[in-house]
Amino acid sequence: MRWWVALIGAAMMVPAHAAPARASVLDYVGECVPFARMVSGIQIWGDAWTWWQQASGKYERGSQPRVGAVLVFQKTGQLRLGHVAVVSRIIEDRVVMVTHANWSRIGGKRGAAEQDVTLFDVSEAGDWSRVKVWYRDNQGLGGSTYPVHGFIYGKGGKAPPARTLAELSSPAPDYVGSLIDAYAR
Image (cartoon, rainbow, N blue to C red; front, side, top):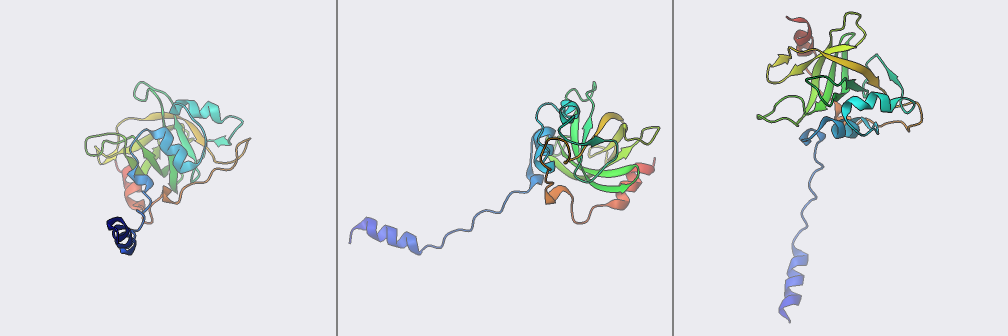
């Protein structure tokens, strides 16, 4: 028997390895825009601050949070490209949780995904036009407030309905911690 026939026969007896498990979206490292598009299913491209205008006529937009909606932060001196985050839980009228990427420093670096992060409406009118965001470096809400355009919902207009990923929220988010972060000053 030739050596290569024996080698092929031996290889066929070795059990195949199981395919690697699908990576979690929480393993993502990169910019907020591709992450929000992947998690929300809303198909918009370009810098985060441009999403609001791009959504006009394509997706429904509004000022009330809904699970799976993308919150669009305005362009500011601190957020030169804006920011987008996906609503993962509604805690109460002025407190939601978001899942987003490239906000806090994790291991000294930006870009990582964070799940169920507290976001607090600090607008005077309670209209979600200005927010504070939980910041890992502070272990609480950051000191800055950010103007936002509003929420883009994954339906309506000319676009097909968006599909939100199941990993948008954890099975056991810290509701109490979220409320403490928002209201304990």
